[in-house]
Length: 326
Image (spheres, rainbow, N blue to C red):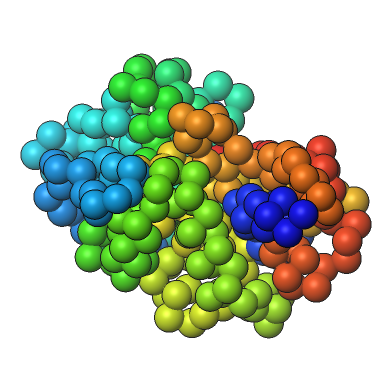
């Protein structure tokens, strides 16, 4: 009986989420205002590791580190705008622009529209191509007055990914990390002792659960333009749902586990919330609806429980509504 309960607890740890209020976190669907015809730094570039790392007696092989880079020499230029689509098959687009006004980068794919803040001082940004194989429209927008923007540059690109996992195995402005990041160093140590990918995921989620506390003050004061830094979350030892999800994604992606940061709503109170989905060959894509067999636990949202949120939010997964993936 004890063994069964222990296994249930171990698998329950895989479902780490963080609660936050309905107004917390960025809203990529925001309107850019009337447009004719219709600040964050990018991750540092690093050399990739070519040889998987293994510790004797373990079986999880750490895949090569996947990065995302801005290549100005390959970018399409128009004035102060540089758009690099040379690696769209790897699941990302890179952009750089200069302006005296605020800038946004818009990605359209099918019925989805993602609006991102981007630096106006020429620092490059990396954004994921989360709609898979599709025709994408990229637009660099400059603020004029209040919520009004004009288009500085646009380009249509037909994207065919090398694999469906490409956007979710590398860093971006939403999941920023490098090989030198503290979170990556800690993740690598845990991966080196994991017996398989599921065991590694368990280690990461258990680590975050016991290392990061929910920051209630931040949840009610954070700006909608806030972007999370996983190393800053580790240093602070606390965060909101966005911080939990980004830290988990950085630690998992850096060691080869395809991981999505998901934004959406959780009923019954329609809380705007962030959580993760991850993929392994053993399990496929897993999110909050992952079912646990055994005594006591069935499905669990760990951080809703840990942060003292009412049990009405801990459902069977059907009360989660996905809106955006990063």
